[in-house]
Length: 449
Image (cartoon, rainbow, N blue to C red; front, side, top):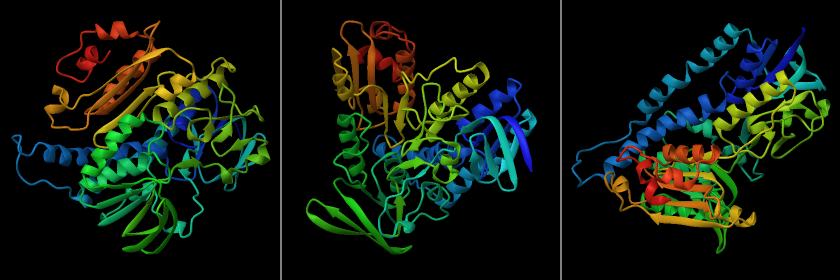
């Protein structure tokens, strides 16, 4: 059946949902398509379920840190029960999201989309025409091109494990490797992270990453850098992971091997060429309005867009809103990613807002660097956290905060303060004299600036 709409959205995650709901609120006819349960990565396969597991791991870690400091007794993670608790958040979500679309007047379609031409897609037996089409399909584990790649467990599969394997190898030292590695270690697994490069978490400040690496190894997670995985063979419970290191070939044994080597936009099977949409390994090529550079009828948002933004849920929501506004108003706004925060939910968390030192130097900026180990400060000592640091970049002449890098308790929430300061152009002197509640992480700011 052929149907026509003002806007056709592919993807029901945070970016696609923002586009659909805002365009519908503006009076446009809207269709939305997904081949998976409605809700996208964040609500079903990423941020939300992951943070449930992180919360349990944090309790275990804090109890261990506080042993001998007034806390005693046994505590452990019951993995099957934890996964059942996680499911209370994820299981109802697809129906809730789809019902929300229907109530708003957005017409839902289930199936994989494929472009037929510049303004239409095929979904099963339906053909959907759109004055505007928005690609917001998110990302998928990147193809690694290694032998036995089909043996790798995806992050979404990890989040549904009914039993936690005893020995886990993570291929890659990015967000997934560190976050899921820290969860698994606190739940009792033996964890190894194999990272090809010389430095993991390369988008974060490397001094803080180095301290996080020490903390990671202190909880018996084996982090190997300069280790290129070349193949996986065997079966669940008896995998062998082949790798090349500076000292030669090495073999690692595991009950499960997890893909943690990055994600890529899931656009390969959309047949974008039929719509004349240019794309590369980072996604659909877009202009500042998030409009395809080669087909003006098509927009992209979130992980599907090569926009230069970070792979973060708030950015996907922001881009979805921006796309909706540009469709409705006619390309009046361009994307602005100033002050975007990013956090690795390791234990402790690692946060970053704004520029790194390398980026600030590359731009030729004149700035000072305020940094310190804060493990002896009250905010870290009271919870016995040995890994706590910060690094703040401040432009000398203007007092602008160029970047903030945080490791330690509540680093995720503290990063939000700096994100607001950078985006709202609140200068260092103003923040330094703010009257924050004590004792909190924000109350440390006067000493950091």
